[in-house]
Length: 323
Image (cartoon, rainbow, N blue to C red; front, side, top):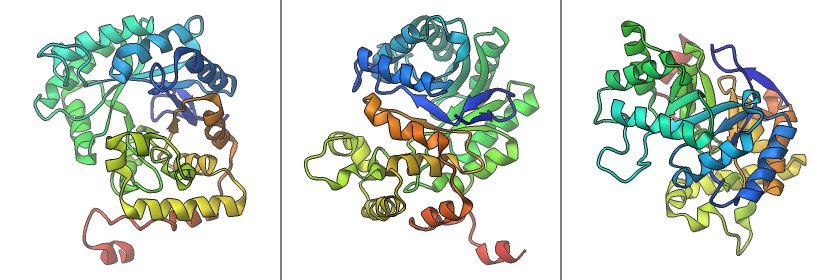
């Protein structure tokens, strides 16, 4: 297993992070336990969850699985979604954040979270209020590091700017979507992470399974077939064409497409870890293998060329290229 520095925190985490969204849902507790044990046995020390996963059951399962080895795990959870049925549930208000973190800690059976992320940007709450609430959690010792997921680059940077001006705990970790068919993070988010020394947990490295190659077979079930949200997210024809080219390349070089997709994601210089999840240990194995796969720059470039080039963040590409 490779271990990398999580941004500027000084904490070392595995280059593969175990995503637990299936725990208590697509994977029952017995299978979740097998996935968890196999991951830790392979050297994974980075675990991602969220309060809204399976209505809190996921955190409860993770809590039971961590017993006796909490200090061996860098634990991440998230806040934003409606975790309980009342008008003030959800969002990034101080009230909800305080209530949500206390509930997460109870479910997880721990006294602290290593990393606590805003699950998305809240347009209805002052960002400064949210950041002050997170800062308070750090001062209370309930959370060690803070950050966010699913923000635009300007939203991450705005939060960092407010924190620096106000002397608040600064974002240390971000969690963007990043895979071969959705490379938008390369335009501004990943360069921002490098410039600001942020830890990056990249989610959906397989494009909800699109890059695994399994959807080329008839009668296959999975998120892209069974879940309308994922079908909408990844149903574009160009994504399928990219995936087809990628799977053919993987088979040509003799590497499991899952292993290659995760390795490609985690080989970006800004990415600390790729988040991988599974419904079974068997499904997990090729993702774990990515941690041992050494991808050359040439191979990464060849794989990148299989997908359409991402438009730049500005319209003066020629001048930027020539200086």
